[in-house]
Amino acid sequence: MFKITQLSKTFHLHTQQRAEIPVVCDVGFAVHPGECVALTGESGSGKSTVLRLIYGNYLARTGSIRVGSTEIVAADPRTILELRRTTLGYVTQFLRVLPRVPTTRVVAEPMIEAGHNATAADAHARNLLRRLRIPETLWNLSPLTFSGGEQQRVNIARGFAYDYPALLLDEPTASLDAINRQTVLDMIGNAKQRGCAIIGIFHDHAARKAVCDREIDISQFAAA
Amino acid sequence: MRKTPLFSVSGLRKSYGAQLGCRDVSFDLHPGEIMGIVGESGSGKSTLLSCLAGHLAPDHGDVCFDVDGTGLVSTLAMPEPERRLLARTQWAYVHQNPRDGLRMSVSAGGNIGERLMNIGARHYGNIRQDACSWMDRVELSVGRIDDRPATFSGGMQQRLQIARNLVTSPRLVFMDEPTGGLDVSVQARLLDLLRSLVQDLGLSVIIVTHDLAVVRMLAHRMMVMQRGEIVETGLADQVLDDPQHPYTQLLVSSVLQV
Image: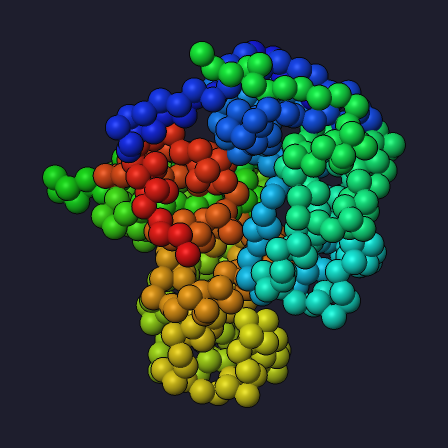
């Protein structure tokens, strides 16, 4: 589902003494449907950068990133938007939403954008919020007022709302208590069972052990 | 999203004497897409928007629109009455200052109804009903329908301008700094409103702003202008998170974090 070859990324910071920061060089790996792969390596080794390159949030100039049949490198914006709508999900560490939009709507949105009807999407969103133990009294409020852990769970509900065939997870279990952590691990397990290919960053060693089939150490691709 | 563009601009250039407005601007906009145009004051973004919306005649280049779903036609080569009809029916233009887009001496309901009457609506009851439903949609109290916009706050005026523009179900909306000049709490409400309207109605939007947060929240794609030229273009979140051009990097890094 994911096939990455000879991927390199260097940041050129024109405004800061024209600094050039090479992050990763010649990254290459593949992930099959139903497989969950953990990216490892110390902080700053480029794990999140690799996730962002795959999502098209950072611009890759060299190499190849294929998600399903779509090539990300040098793809036009429309291709990436379509891929994100139907194929590739991304659970970021932090929730970023417009103020005032109710939580149920935030969670239901990816399903609606992918073409589900609004009522079904709303019902599914409610199920997910219940499963992730967000109190029902909060569902009609904007998640921006929630605690950090609640925001993260809303973010996870949103990321898992639509059954994407490919998922990127950036520390999905950080700052969760034991029960919620187990729920998220179960959700990852369910996604794998339906054939979803997952690339994740998990600092939590036990979580990594529980859901990941393989580990890829990103520091082996450190730029010289 | 459909595969053919709704709107297409090629090689657009406009100068004011020796002073450059904008040059070499080309892009396509597909149905349902939101394009953000950013740049500092004087970078030519408002000039560009005026040329796109037919308020200014460009010196070079073409602006094409798919009028009836059969393909792009040049709006510059169109006879004037046809272009005016297009501007009244399929296009809408939201000004930065609501006073430029509203008739201040006419009631709120009249402001909304006028656009309908311009395209042939005559039944008073229906017009009034449409006006009421749009007042409600932009979160204005229907009880204020007979009040003049001069008695409204800036944020209310901006919402009224949006209602007046969207009542005729346009397919393409031009917006010039729609949240400029509003305080932040009003801005957030307006952004949320704009986003849900755009989603529900499937509108295509070209939005000029200097506020990068507006682009992040609303736009799919963005273009960055400097001294009349487009220096960078791409997926909105990619340009904001991984800007390539020195000027874009300067813009993005100059935003104060709250």
